[in-house]
Amino acid sequence: MEYLPDYYRKDLLVLGVGNPLFGDDGYGPAVAEELTRRDRVPSFAAVLDVGTGVREILFDLILSPERPKEVVIVDALDCGRQPGEVFRVKVDEVPKIKSHDFSLHLAPSLNLLQELRDNAGVAVTIIAAQPKPIPEIVTAGLSEPMRKAVAETADYIEETCFRPE
Image (cartoon, rainbow, N blue to C red; front, side):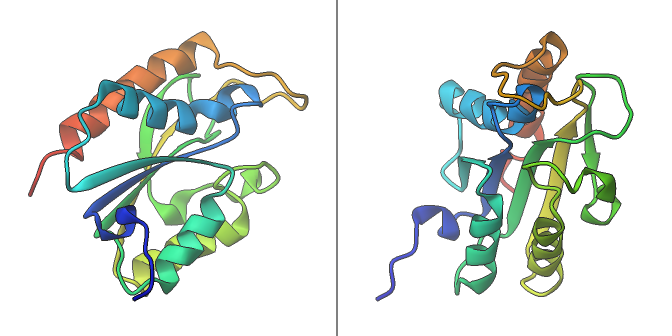
């Protein structure tokens, strides 16, 4: 029998994406950490801080014989909004201009999300927050607006995603 991590068998998988060494890009991992810290993740769900390794997880999910019904991606996304503003975005609406950073928005990750949705039948939700400019050098720590966005996002996920159908 092939070994599969437990989270492949969950109905819901929340992935915190980003690099905490680059300021507000660490928003996704901070949300995953906050959800885990609260210790209210239901048995049908799993929360992972995948950092910058989201592509490998998505690729494995596509190839897996078992996979979640829904994947929620949590990441910083520059869409010209107010810093710290939390919003949902569809996979097809993620701006291509952010393809140079370390996060979800690299073209292969977007293609993998589309394939996960279209070919593997997994619902894909992206919850994002508007970062302040991401530093070009290592600068750990979130801005004040993004620290507030972490709590808001964790609340939102608990209220909307952690409810059994």
